[in-house]
Image (cartoon, rainbow over all chains, first blue to last red; front, side, top):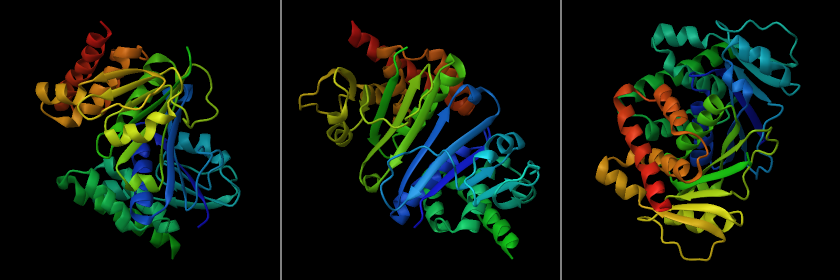
Amino acid sequence: MERCRLVFSGSGGQGVITAAIILAEAAVLYEGLIAVQSQAYGPEARGGATRSEVIISDTDIFFPKVNQPNVLICLTQEAYNKYSPSIRPGGLLITDTRSVQTGKKVDAVQRGLPMHQAVMEEIGKSIVLNICMLGALIGVTNLVKSESIIQVLEARIPPGFLEMNRKALDIGIRLATETNR
Amino acid sequence: MERCRLVFSGSGGQGVITAAIILAEAAVLYEGLIAVQSQAYGPEARGGATRSEVIISDTDIFFPKVNQPNVLICLTQEAYNKYSPSIRPGGLLITDTRSVQTGKKVDAVQRGLPMHQAVMEEIGKSIVLNICMLGALIGVTNLVKSESIIQVLEARIPPGFLEMNRKALDIGIRLATETNR
């Protein structure tokens, strides 16, 4: 596989760190891959934009930092403004259409998906937006199988909340697949 | 301040990643420091030992990986066996006395603390062992203030569970301080 360098970005509390950990665990525990997951907090962490990073590979990863992601997901305008210039040329940019107005030219495949809107309409709780985001990611890229993510969710989430998370994952996959058509 | 490179290690489900994120957030959001938090998952992630890393500094951090921690905490024997050889000479090694038998010579200040035992006796839930571990860390090192960790906990944890976490933090600080005497 090609090494995949991802950045998830949004605002504090949207669960982009949790999503990165879930993705890394899914890749490693259920798909036999290698992953590094990290977040850097600088003075900017006290502002609004949060980011988390995941590198997934089938060979050893020696430099664990993502300077130029080839996949960038932005859940907020601020995150988009801040991180979209760093995307690797020819990469993939996924944005939440409700929250992000893409404007500047970015040399990337762009996918605007109404993740937040769909989660609110169909589930009513924005807390699972991060899981919908993972669904959108794997719907577009096939990076890991949805079953691998569900296995991580089953191990991490109390049974009563599992169904909601599974639904959010499905919404993300559906949005990505609809857009692909 | 001196740059602090920490590794928390234990088994899956003990919350060493969560503890690392809480520490990094406390340092950055409430103490004006810079932090990088990461975990690398390789084939070994499918075994028993889990580790998470935090670097805390007051200046920029360019290399985010911890090869030689100057603070290493081990909650299980397997984690100790695996990671104690990597400690930076003259560093600090904190182990859980119930779970870890230290044997080999390690060039470090060693502190065995009965964290698991105290948490079980006084709270009865091992789920907060990771917070007790953070208490022990700051009790020994004064790396960040306990109030900074409590502020992060207040923002992350449902109100009903806050008291239990606060108590676990206090137990860790107390164990560290008793041992200091």
